[in-house]
Amino acid sequence: MSWLITRLGLRAIDARKGEVAALLWSCAYFFLILTAYYILRPIRDEMGVLGGVQNLAWLFTGTLIGTLLLHPVYAGLVSKLPRRRFIALTYRFFILNLVAFFALFSFADAAQSVWVGRFFFIWLSVFNLFVVSVFWSFMTDLYRPAQSKRLFGVVAVGGTLGALLGSTITTSMVGVLGPVNLLLVSALFLEIAARTAGALDRHEDQLAAEARAEAAERGQVNGEPDPLVHGSEIIGGGVAEGVRHVLRSPYLLGIAALMLFYTIAATFLYFQRIDIVSRVFEDDPAGRIRLFGGMDMATNVLTLGTQIFLTGRLLRWLGVGFGLAFLPVVCLIGFGFLGAAPVLAVVVVFEVLRRAGNFALSRPAREVLYTVMSRSDKYKAKNFNDTFVYRLGDQIGSWSYTAMAWLGLGLSGLAFSMLPLSLAWLMLALWLGREHRRMQQQGGEGGSQRTR
Image 1: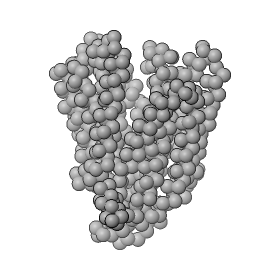
Image 2: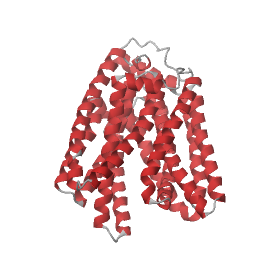
Image 3: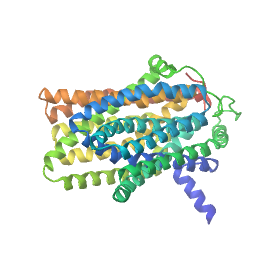
Image 4: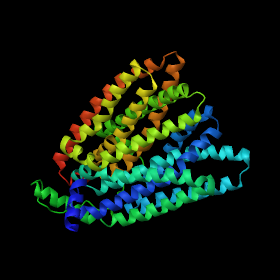
């Protein structure tokens, strides 16, 4: 009976038996990271309100600057240390930051707390992108291309569950512990995540063996081990290597443009959602909270179901290009409907489908793109795209939306302005899907370590 349950479970998640241990550690690792972040996220939002809503745009600008300053430090660690060392050091650096903020908030007076809160807002916005980027860099280094298509959706389930737990901890414990003490709770989860990453690192050889066996079964390779693939090796290279590779490689530059399109569209939709919701629930803050809670619940249900049962199979059957193209198609349809009818029902359905589609399909597909790149690009170029380019898109989206609204463009016009961007995004997604397939065919399962 247990044999049958195990077999059915493996088929449900589309995993091979030798991959299960690494997959569980990967899910636990992502679970812990997003638990740590979502404990802090409501505190960050409160700090943003206390610092003045009129200052939010400047806080986002500060986040962009902070991201740009931190990337060379991280790239330097990647160049000089083996994977298990620089990943651990990255997380422990952020843990020390949390302890420092705990001390600052504990001893600051009311006026000082406002400024500490502003710096915390910027810090957490940088922290979120860096810790998640490091996680996915590790995943693209550990899993081969064919494995990533099957399993990244399941790995993402851990993050979804972690986000739910982190939000629950803050909601239920903030009245008991207070927001400042929750910083230490988050630091504890982050430390466990660092130790989990070390445990996962020890499963690299088993994953590689399963990848070779799978490829041999398909007649793709002769099953010989790839001596270039091992996390104990120092990646080397220069601090600015990732930035140079992004600027010189059409493929990496395409991923950067994909990130820009995504963040600009997400920012436009966020501003429109806030505008429409604030009008409908003008004097009903409780109604706004209920609506946002319901949207989050619907998003999580759709995301979990898709991640567990569909993501891996869709990426394997229909290709990475399908996963990448799903979100721009949703945005083409959604912004079209929103332009024709800028009402609450349209923006709610659009936002739920967009977020669920991103978490369940587009994000895993975007991470798969890096599995055919060199180890240096997986950590350096990817981190630059995931952090600086992401925040640059935030800036472009927020300031361009503000400027267009100031010039008199209404909700319908703002929505319709996103249609050309969504179409260009769709064309880019399909091109990147074709390029990934071509690079994987040229390099085989071991090509991820050789292709530049």
